[in-house]
Structure formats: structure tokens, C-alpha cells
Length: 209
Image 1 (cartoon, rainbow, N blue to C red):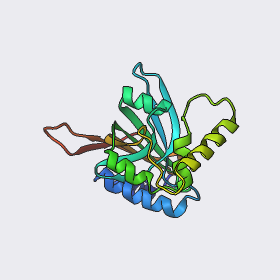
Image 2: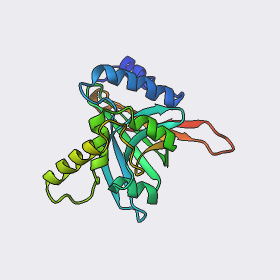
Image 3: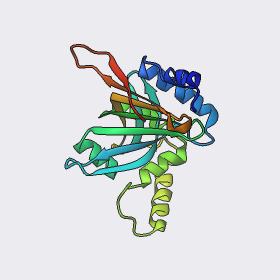
Image 4: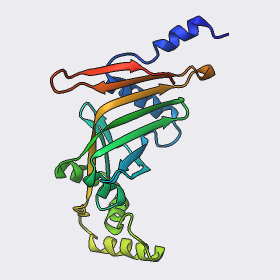
């Protein structure tokens, strides 16, 4: 029989408060417990016709303005983002037995923000971005290696120029959903939805797991 005290504690485990603050707390705890890439997230996008696709990317910045990642805008996901800005993120931390789902709209970051992040990366990562036609057919791996070597020679002795199509996108959340594992499938699950322009703020509710 499930202990009533345990249920009471579980009910308060996901506070009805600021979802950004709860995200920040969980991210900090994940960085301490996850062995690799605590900032890894599944990014779901869709075509203008609604055909979905999903892949793992790395979160590079987050705060009250939203959640930012970087990519080649001419890749499959980049093309989907530009034709349908609705997207969703999923963080799953196995070590903590938690997940966060975030839904919202993606907007491209300013060029100066993309420049700053691009030049904070290792030089080889910058050169790899120059050499890659991400998501395009590759005749053979050697072709990619040769393009990387060409980029290395082209920028030798100077800064690597950020390709115009390599940029960042920031998701502005319209909804969050937090999930926390509990024994006997009595999991905690709370959803936050942003209010409209008139009312602002967030409304939230517990959901059956």
C-alpha cells in the first residue's frame, strides 16, 4: 500500500511557480549528475505540411528569453524551421529520472550573436561547419575530408569566417511540461501554459501521468 506521506511529498515536488526558474534548477542538477551532455535535447520540427522530424541537438543558452541552439540553416531542420516556426524540445535526464517538454516558436538570433558563438567554438569545429553541406548527399567520406582540408588552408593565419547559413535559433516557450519519476507509476507531471497578451503570466495544472 502506498504511504500517504510519500504521496503528499510527491504532490509538492513540482511547484506551481516560474517554469524558467524550475528549468534552471533542473539544468544545474543535471550538470552535476549526467555523465555526458547534460544539455542534449531532442528537437522536433515539421514541414509546412506538418510532416514531423526529430533529432538531438545541444542547448547553448537559456534564460527568460528562451532556449538557443545553433545549426546550418540549409540543413533539413533549418529548412523546416524557416517554413514552419512551431517546434518542441525534450530534455531527458536518465540519472535524475526527469524530463522537460517545451513547446513554442523559433526565431533566428541576430547575426552578431551567431558570430560571437561561432568564434567561441574550437577552430576545428568552425572549419567543420564551413566544410559541411549538412543534410545534403555526400558521395564519399573522402570528399568531406578534402573540403575540411581546403577550408583549413583557406583560413590559415586568420579568423574562420562564419558561413551566412550557419546561425542560431531561439525557442520562445508557450508551454512547459515537467515530469518526475515516482514509484508505482505515481509520477509527477505539471504543465505550464503562457497566458495571452492581455493576461500574461503562466497558468499551470497537474496532469495524470
